[in-house]
Length: 54
Image (cartoon, rainbow, N blue to C red; front, side):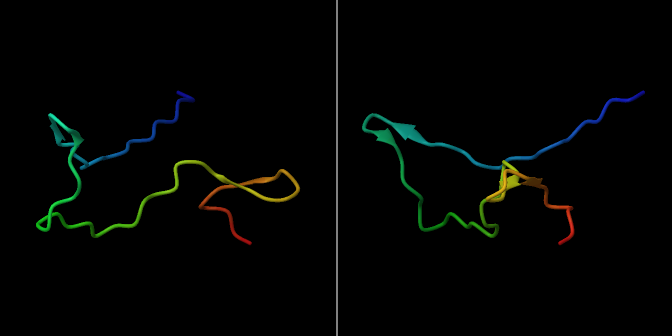
């Protein structure tokens, strides 16, 4: 019907203590690099999406 939906998942949890947010623990495992949330903009102002070739 002309509508496009994008579904994203997140697994991050912020632990907050009396001194503010807690840092990562030794048991925390990060298997993925941070994902890009904005498309790339080249020096000419052209937007390039991940699925663009070239």
